[in-house]
Amino acid sequence: MTALSAGTIARTLLVSSRPVSWINTAFPFAAAYLLAARQPDATLVVGTLFFLVPYNLAMYGINDVFDYESDLRNPRKGGAHGAVLDRRLHAITLWAAGLACLPFLGYLVAVGSPLSWLVLSISMFCVVFYSAPPLRLKEVPFADSATSSIHFFSPAVYALVLAGASWTPQLVAVIAAFALWGVASHAFGAVQDVAADREAGIASVATVRGARWTVRFSLACYALAGIVMFQTAWPGPLAAALTLLYLGTVWPYRDVTDETAERATAGWRRFLWLNQIAGFGVTLLLIWWAALTA
Image (cartoon, rainbow, N blue to C red; front, top):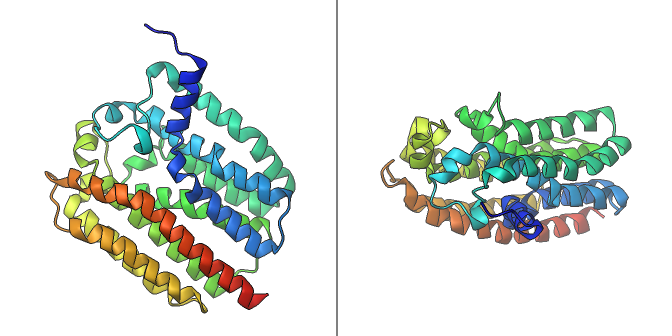
C-alpha cells in the first residue's frame, strides 16, 4: 500500500473541511459580533478564523470519518460534497480537528462569560455528536435537521452573547428565521442521499418520511423563515425576498420519489452557490441597517 504523503494528507483534510461552506459559519459570527460590539477587536478576528476553518474541519471531518461506510456507496462524495477518507486518515483527521480547534477555544473561553461558555459548548457538542457515537444525532429523524441547523446559527448566537448584545423580540425573530433556514437546508440535502443512507442502514428525516414529504417540509420551513422576517424592523423584511431564491431552487423537486431522489443533487449543487448570493444580499442589508442605527 502506498504511503500517505504530507501533501496528500493536507489536500484531503482541505477537501474534508468543505471550503465552499466555510463562509456559512464564519460570516454569521463575524456579522453578529461586529453589529453587537460596533467595533473590530482581537476577539472578532480570532472568532472569525475559528468559525472559518477549524470549526468546519471538525464538523465535516468528524462526519467523513463516521460516515465512511455510507460515503463509499455515495457517488456524489468527493470535492465540494466532502471526501471519502482513506481509513488510514481517520485518526489523523480526528486529531487534526481537535488540535486545530484547541487554541481558538482556549482563547474564546478566556475572554468569554459563563453564558458564552454554555453557548459555545452546545455548539461544539452538536458539531461532535451530530456524527460521532454514541449519540449520532444525524440518525435521529428531525433531530438531524435541528442539529445541523444549530451548526450554522449557533455561531451568530455565540457572537451576540460574547459581545453582550441586548436580546429583543426582533433579534430573536432573526435567529428563528436563520434556524428555520438551516432546518430546511439540511432536510433538502438529505433527500439526495436516501438510497445511499438506506443501503448503509442510516436513518434520516428523508429515509423515514420519504423524499417527497421531506422536500415539501423543506419548502414549508423556507417559507416560514421568510414570514418570520416580516416580524423584524426595516430593512429586515427585505430579507424575506432571499427565501424566494431557495423556494425556487427546491420547488422543482417537490414531487420526487424515493426512487428518483438523486435528482435533487442538481438542486443541491445550485444551493451551495446560492448561499454566496444570499450572503451578499444579507451583507448589503446589514450595512443598510447599521447605517440607519448609527
